[in-house]
Image (cartoon, rainbow, N blue to C red; front, side):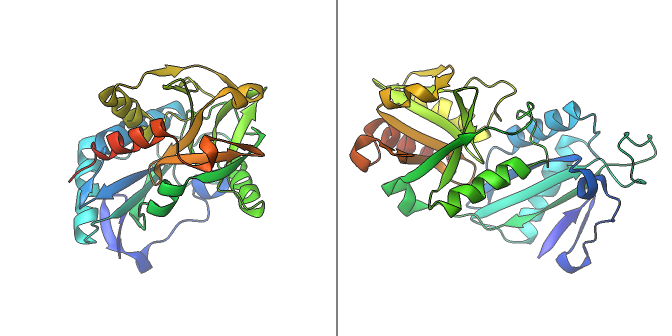
Length: 278
């Protein structure tokens, strides 16, 4: 496997991370996961723009321009002959003596990117999944796709330990998002999802789902969804780069759509697939 380290494509075995890289010591960095369909890097512009925004919010300067990075990512996909998979990419603030303060301008950001396995969970998309809710213990800048993921990791593991697919976060009574997913609820044919503020990550797939809904004639509303009102909704689904549109058939002890993916969710699945590369 070839990986991209800063501006070089090197063998996986050659890749090294310095012990004083701030990503390693502080989680001081940002990342993206980009889906590859039929050799095409899907929504690469949107992902790179979000990477730039996240880095900017942390006052990290990307090591090179987005157009250059786009070309290197495509080169990475080509040299590894990725047809159906994904690319993981991260940027840290760089290597410097351990200190909570940002280092000086002589420290350069460090970039790494490499292919990761990613296939559609087709059977789960047909059957739907069960999820659980938990308190949202994360920091209040979830709009930044940072390397600080311990709260997400703990929630994902709690779901696995409980035999559930995902944990859905609740903050002050409001459903925000999943540990690695965005959250949607359907009522009377309208899709509701949390506003894209600092309490959630505005997923690239979330934006494409909004587009898919428009194409399918489905109304979308961004509003706070109260956990106490989840029983009033007809359908629920979640999304991410790797799972696309995933029906939820049960939250905690509450079932939806008689334990099957609902009709609006299925319609959105179809409309989303129509946006993907052939």
